[in-house]
Image 1 (cartoon, rainbow, N blue to C red):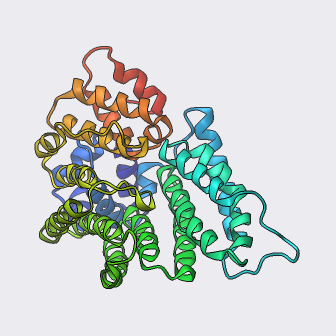
Image 2: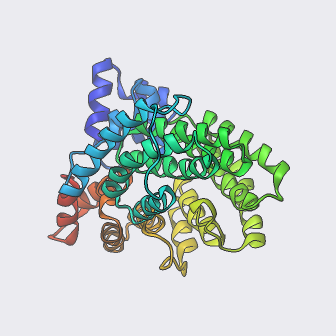
Length: 386
């Protein structure tokens, strides 16, 4: 990524000092990033992209060249899903005589299960076939079930597309989730869909709009806390706003949202409403990431100590293992960082080999390796060179 930053800067004809001043970082920090000596976090890379007037993916290099056949299949399915979503906006009536076939709810559960296992190829491939069925059913007598399923599976599509490095496609999936929730009229569904869209906005560096989107939906949800899963979704919305507030450099607001999320988790316990895996463990997972993103890798490692994630789905586990690899690399516990990154790949290979954070951490570890080690094979599988 450092080479991409340097190339973009030189194309502009800017000095390191000028580019760094535009991004609000020290010129020495910028220089170390270009030389590959410093790993950027998700907030800094957004600032650098804005300074260079390019997209984040221009700098991270996503989507990556597939490292295996499953990833290749996932990228092919991503293209097919985008085309299918474009062809079937929710306000477009179904074709005359078209009838939904099969058990759409069972199929949506399978897709969500595949996503939870980070089988993006499987989830997106099946979603391509389910979208037309959901579209037809959403205009039929059992529209509520179809719309509820749509909110969830379009959210799954958004997450997989974002992880694979297709933010524009992910935005469309998030928008379809919003449309389904609006037609359903359920405040919890609307908040879930808003969180989906906020995630895409934040991924591209638009933290302010992301925060506003989730904040509005959460404000509405607070008026309906007696409805099913309202507190669970409200708690998760606090986590999302903590992340967005951190991106806005408002650490005080981020801390307040994390505290409120923890308070709500004490009331609700561990739940799986709307596939959020909500509860105290999830709050700790997000707190680990928050510590890393605010320059406290030691606190991140301490917060994660003793955290039991064995019963969480791989999609949750891989994010923790990737975050811990980042933190351990930052405190120069490289052997442990390599083991954590290898664990992330074992648990969720398609995700780990596509993740910008995992690949950047692997590159840093590969550069620092003084002898043959397991990071070399891992980096090769990720398509990372020193």
